[in-house]
Amino acid sequence: MNNIKFEVQHFTLCDGWINTWHEYDDDNDEVPMIFDTFGEALLELDNFLADEIKAYNMGDIESPYGRDEFRIVEIKTSEGDTCPKFEPAQEE
Image: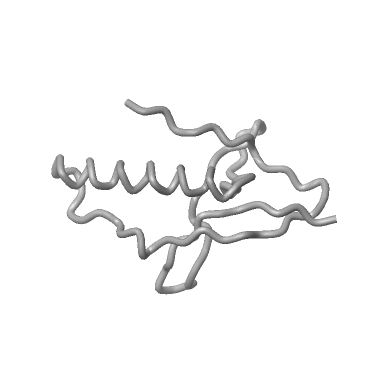
């Protein structure tokens, strides 16, 4: 049985569209970030892009990423595959 999940993909020159976002599981192993809903993936992307604008405005980065460099795609996972529980980023 397949489960529908979502991931944020970034366009890279070498590999095209790939999931470059990772987090750590309970065993401290790096795993790709995968979201249960489109809304969760969109929220995480929106928060990331807002942080990019803040960093740009503060002079911490030369230019922020643009929304057109990212997409949210539906992926299928096999039964038994797990992903870490999504926890929205906290506002500062």
